[in-house]
Length: 309
Image (cartoon, rainbow, N blue to C red; front, side, top):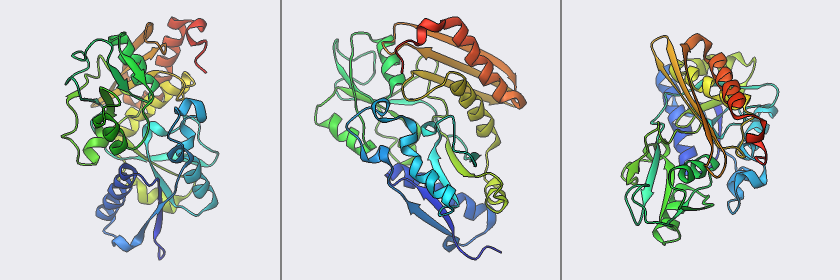
């Protein structure tokens, strides 16, 4: 019988903490456990500490996970809660993404100061975004727009926006909803025209392979639709060797036993893009994502990827 609290690793941002508490509360409800059986352990990551440069310049997505993964591997943590889109496609040996919570809204939220929508921004306006995917999609739709690097917590970005540093910014709507900030967006972007990052809107839990005590606990809150959809999207990303250096979008939807995937790769300037859409049985989610990745790689040709890394 478990006598010590389960130690849940998380970053310390308001959004990360909201995700950790949601995970804890779902486990309490699923197992009828006392709140005292869970301890939230906050760790500062390199990605949290360096906010003045793009992730692609300082090492990519792993900067938000390394300290948490070190805690898992040492046994100091029982499991860690992450935003799925922050996770590298290759995890440290011995760790895996065992659990996904039900997915939130996948759309990107537009927050405009001088206009309510992307297409209504004045000519030559400035948008702040640190995401290469968002930058490329903005330039694809509005090549006249000036895009600048914009990192930091949600409130930091909104403060910079209100100070007039930029005309608009983009944020994940899922994160705003989890923070109770649904009032912030001035528009929501259609995922057909502005597809999300692979795994956007999904909370994942990372744990040790073979740790049956922890993984049996987590199995009760795993959402199978989200698990299959995100597995497909991450396979697409992995096939393209995706990182924060590459503008890649991908979104899988589940309808009964069927999975439909829409993926896109872009050049950073948004002038060239290749899309793919595949439908198949959800039982082959990973294979569908990998095949979609191979299809867009073949369509794009080797020259498409030059200069991305």
